Length: 214
Image 1 (cartoon, rainbow, N blue to C red):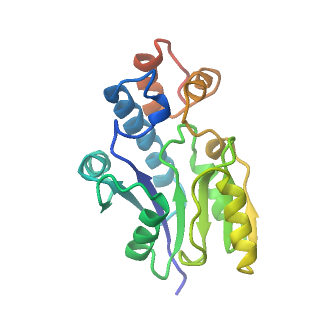
Image 2: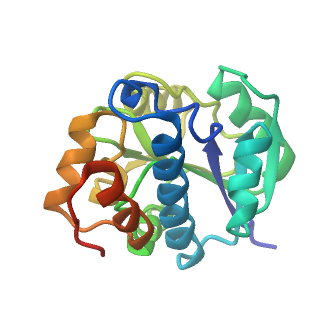
């Protein structure tokens, strides 16, 4: 029987994450932005060819944000800092025996076509890098094929880990995965591109100007 593909979206407590934006956005604004980007990522995944979507939530407020848009949740210990341990636990819980696609929650340009482009690659590990060298998407077939190394330069680290394990490795360069939001510059740049409808709806209140919805 063919394996299913489970998408895992890690989410910190809205308002607590995005600390590099804390000097320009208050916790309520960061929470609003986080929830909107999660909504756009969720919609892209729902319309893609993944079979299941689960949020790895960092505490009750993150779980509530996911549940508010109808997503199943695996709740992690609040305040746990090690994202790789969170993802290892979530993979064991929901991805045993299945393919697992990890997708960042802060990808306001993500489309179903971006997701399906990753799924279409014939590789045991597929990496979709961000502009800063992070990992916007990581597909493992099956989910336990390699561990994760999220953090600075993680795209290269995931490729190296997969090659060391003898895996067939693919890379997908897509704008939807490349444009994650960590800094004020990242946010301002969204005025020049199309973004998901949920993110477009909240950005004027965050930045004070209208943006184009995709």
